[in-house]
Image (cartoon, rainbow, N blue to C red; front, top):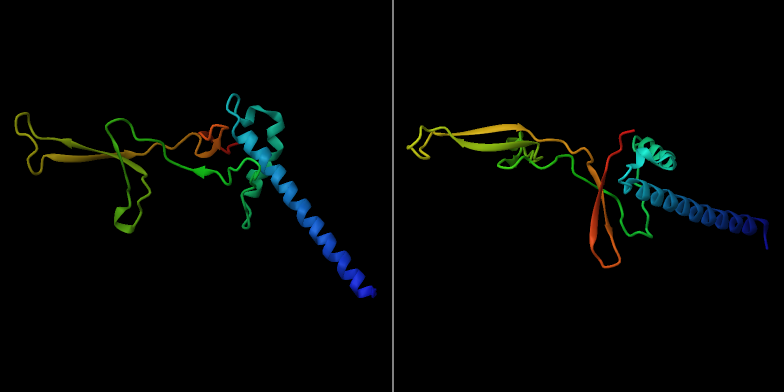
Length: 160
């Protein structure tokens, strides 16, 4: 065998091993993130063993090439994200920027009848009232399937 062929084979096998090692490490980290994020009582901040993987995640999210670490063994993939909580009862979700294709659902709105009693809903008697839509305390979530095939949603946040 030539020296070049042996060198090429060595580089390829090392690259394959490193790629496998990187994937295994990423999978392990993804599973740590999943376990910590799904911790609810206490949340991950109250579990000292969760600080290293979660702090690593928070730091990695600042990078331009960030890719969420996943846990293929759990079948969950990347988490979902819903910034806004539900509007209070009697209010509907709306957008403060509908004219510009916003549709973010960032406000709660309610249509109120301002006519005097007995006049019903005449033209000009309706007033739309808005308020900022509440933000979720825990905006990220994982949907985790149990053995029966049912999903349980685990909400979490990434504040330190």
